[in-house]
Structures are given as C-alpha cells and as structure tokens.
Length: 380
Ligand code: ADP
Image (cartoon, rainbow, N blue to C red):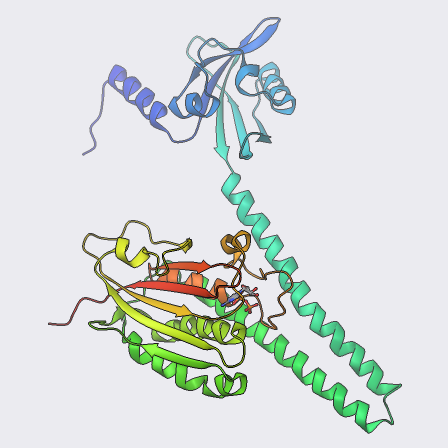
C-alpha cells in the first residue's frame, strides 16, 4: 500500500532504496585543487570495486584515465557526462558510467552522482551476433563459390565434353543441396530460438517417435550398412514436448551416430525412465560425461525420460567436448559433410523443453549423447 511519508522517513527510505539498487551508484565530491573523492558508494559499488568507498579518492575506484577525465570535466562545468569503459580482470567487464551534477540544498555545485551500468552481457550478445553472421556467410559462400566456378567451367573448357559436364553437374547438385540444408537449419534454429522461452505443452510418446525416426532413416542406414537397435525400456511414459522439434533432436543425434559409425557397425538407442534429475544426469558408461546443458531448478519430484544414442564411431577427444553444441563447430580433421548446426539445434530444442544434454566420449571408444526431458504427468 502506498502511504505518504514525512520528509525524514522519505529521506531514509530513499537512502535504503539507493543502497539496495543492483547497479553501482557513487556520489563524487569535488575538492578545490585536489582530486575528487568518493562521498558515498552503495552496496553494489562497494562490491564491484572491492574497497571501502567513503573518503577514497575517485581514482581508487575508477582507474581508467578516460573515465576520470570525463567525471572531472563534468564536475568542473556542472554538466552531465557519459563514458564507456572496460575493467580488466579474470573476466573483463564492460561498463557505461552516467555522471549527473547533483544540486543539493546547500547548493554545493561540486557534487556528482555516477551510476554505472554493466553492459557486458549486451556486448557479448552483440559480438555473438556478429560472429554468427560472419560464420553463416562464410559457410554459404564456400559452396556458392564452388557453384560459380563450375558454371564458368561448363561455359568454357567443359562446353563440349559431355563426360566432364555430367560429373560437374553432379557436384553442383550436391553443393546446391548442401546450401539448401544450411538455409533450412539456419531457419529452424532461428524459429526455435524465437519461442525458446515458452515451454511446450504437448504430450509426446518418445518410444514411438524414436521408432518413426528410425524407420525414416532406413535408406541411410542400409546405404551405410549400419544397424540401429532400439531399447524402449520399461515404464517409459510420455514427455511434455513438441513432437516435431523432438523428431529433429532424435534425427540429428541418430544421423550423427550413423554417419560416424563405420560400415558394419551398430548404433544403439535406448529410453529409460528417471525418477529425478540426479538419476537423469548420471553417467551411462561410468566414464567421463560432460553436461552441455542442464535445466535450471526443476520443480520437486520432476521425473525425466532419458534418451541415449550410442555409436561405434571414432569418439571425440576431450578438448572438443565443451564446444560441440556451438554453431558451426566441427572437430578438426573430420569431414562430416554436415552443416555444423545439428547439435546446436538439439541444444536449443532441449533447452526449450527444460531438459538436459550430456556427451560421453573418448577417442577410439565411440560416443554416447544423452538427452533427458521432463516426463509428462500420467493421465488419470
Ligand atoms: P555436423 O552437421 O557437422 O554433424 P553437428 O552439430 O551435428 O554438425 O556436430 C558438430 C561436430 O561434432 C561434428 O562436425 C563432429 O565433428 C562432431 N560430432 C557430432 N556427433 C558426433 C559423433 N556421434 N561422433 C563423433 N563426432 C561427432
């Protein structure tokens, strides 16, 4: 309830609010002929600058010369100033300082309020967007350059050579398919990201979905002479999910497993019920498992369904594991022919489902990718 407060109470409340603001706020006092000092710093400011602020020279908290210069300039002219700067440490952070002259009752013109805004996350997102755009353009440009090259060859040297023409047209068709796949994956990823914050509400029978995906990739497994076995597991109910997106998850994991398993090898897909997060996360091979995604605080008593895809491929060296679900990341020396977006799509879909993703792999020992998803409440 809102109540009018007397002046003292309002002052005390204002001070408390200032103290509790999540952004660092400092009050700077200008001094004749001397460096300005800090008259007050709220809790966030004291934590960020790790010093007892009152009475400290401004330079002890804000060391960057461009920031000191801007603030001293604002003090001298009693005007506002704004300056962006970076603090260097184990993790560099980007800040923007807003200085405003404070006109107080005693009319001291030499006081400034400086509010600091942490812009690190915004900068990081900005950089990721720029990197993503550069990577996506690069990925598209490579097949495009190859297409343009073949068009030129077909127009000139290979003009009257039907054998070469057939061969080049074949490669061109492959490159065009690759570009189309890349565009499809990029669109898919952006659609998933758009509603990633809205958890799906449908009910999906995972055992059935796994069977459908496995039927759909029969031509690929036959071509590669890889067999896929499915272990549906006892008591595995449905999960809360979006069927089309879960088809993509299963398909990408099984496709990779089949792609990396040598001819004559086996891929094993299993489903298991887990009564809680701890069991869902547990390693399946007893070795080193790395979590690529885990859900934030699920509600108590949430059960999960764990999907594991195990292959007999070359395995993945430990140093690559943490980066596998980054867009366009590929293990060096592996020519997957894929888009490098498959696992990124898996991660974003699973994140939307409030589930988790784990990889267990070592060189020469194949790989197991596990996805766990919240089980749907049994229908009464
Ligand atoms: P791609 O389309 O290149 O397969 P992914 O995002 O699905 O893209 O996978 C990223 C990279 O992770 C692959 O290029 C490959 O180096 C590695 N990788 C993924 N799955 C496996 C697997 N089952 N066995 C070995 N390496 C894998």
